[in-house]
Length: 95
Image 1 (tube, helix red, strand yellow):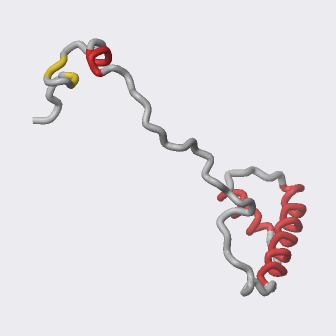
Image 2 (image 1 turned 180 degrees about the vertical axis):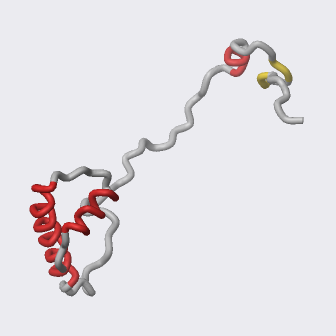
């Protein structure tokens, strides 16, 4: 696929880049090389390749769930300005 300077201008607008006029020809050549390589990759037979989401095997690295005691309810409620029925009392915000 032939990449023109108009295409380079359009791509630079989309990517919010400002290319000097002398760099546009070089960028067009580089983009042509990228598109040509994509054509090579598109021609490969990948029917026997299993799709994957990552190139490296990923494992969940979170810690195991363990039941641990949390803070004392009475101590925590003592930090609030008003308490009612074991919960913080807050002003009504919805009518």
